[in-house]
Length: 308
Image (spheres, rainbow, N blue to C red):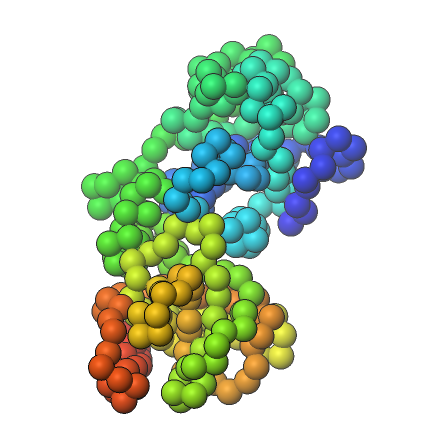
């Protein structure tokens, strides 16, 4: 998959795609439906048009984090679904000011040369979100690109949306989130250096930042970890603690993962941690012995869950 961020001087081979448009946060079942429709809408490479930063981040930079995945994780997921061209446009003042007509003419036609676009039925675009699917169809008819609208889908009677997935994760229901996502919710990033307390306790962990991501419910999870590069590439079962480590004072939230039956240095490796099941909330213990005893229990429980 090619990721195209500068659309000023486009390679001719990167034009002429059939593209799904949206933010695709989580790449959930609804997004996957849009992608499937886009892929079959025209005899052209499958593309996705999305924006960085997310428009919601752009207009409210100080709001609490809401994103389900970072840009790299989203790109990985889209590539796995067959996307060939990812147009990752910079969302800035100029783009935000474009009218719906100007967005269609300047971006979709002149810059990207799209032959067909597919959007969800709730799609809005252009300055102050003045454009909708009807507007898009009108401009497509006059400017020469096709438009397909994908209806919203439901899972277990609930409309599939990033909002519903965030709610499930915030309540410690990763299984429900996975049902709407069509895959396990993952936190991806580089392994960073921590204070190495886990190593001293007999539970060395791979630590990751969750900055700018919507925080799932703090606590302990059974997880499945993919090491994406380096000497230890592969998939491992494990147990992870997500939160602020109340035993050791006030800390910035992060994710600490202990991989079962693993020995090695993962610093600076890219890893992907899938939240399989929520085991218990964060807790503060009377001492290190009590903490270690609970970690033993957490590991046993996580192994049981993952074996199922």
